[in-house]
Every structure is written in C-alpha cells, then in structure tokens.
Length: 142
Image (cartoon, rainbow, N blue to C red; front, side):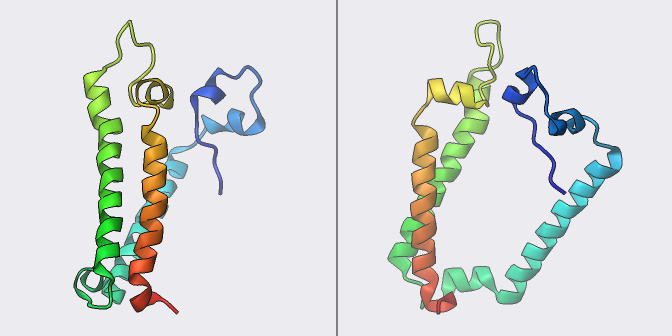
C-alpha cells in the first residue's frame, strides 16, 4: 500500500493531514515488509536480466547502433558523476555547522549552491533514455 514519504515541508506544517498523522507510526513488521518487497523486485530484475541475456547482448551484439549507444552511456555517466557530487562531495565539503543551518544533501542547499545541476541531470537523463531506446531498437524493437 502507499505510504507518504516525509519531507521538510510536511514536518514544518502546522496542520497535519491524515497521512501525516499515520506516517510516524509504522511498525517493525511494516518496515521489514518494505525491505522484503524491495528485495523481491531486485531478484525479479536479476532473473529477467539473466534470462534475457541482457548485459551480454547490450555490450556485444552487432545490431546495437554503437555511436548512439555510446552517447547514451556518456550521458548516463554524467548523471552518475553529478549524483556522486551532490550526495557525497558536497556533504563532505560543507558539513552541517552553525553558519549552514541546512544540510548540504538537501534540495534547499543545492538550489542555492549549484542551481543548474538538477536541470542538467534531467536533460541528460531524458536524452540518454531516448538514445538508449533508439540504439537498441534493432534487437528489442518492433
């Protein structure tokens, strides 16, 4: 079932909704159930990739349009590097201190310190996804 994810805005709100009241009252069995469901999805993804020979096909098949595939991989690599920058480098460089009242791994900090990173990641992800589909249409297309 759907459960609301906590946010800073929801915690600061003075008028909690029905979902806000129930959010903090998750039992241990619900948390374990979430972990089991996540593990089940990972196992299903692994079995699907193994059964279809996804990775060997992706990297060795001649029907893949290599220049387009390589550009899509470069765009996804840019996304990975920017994600590491936002989640590892910035929190190490700017730890929480009395001068910074906001964590360096929060959207508020990113919006002030590096406002163009999220739009760049979005563009790279969208274009990279379309290029990946285009490069593989000879194998898994119509």
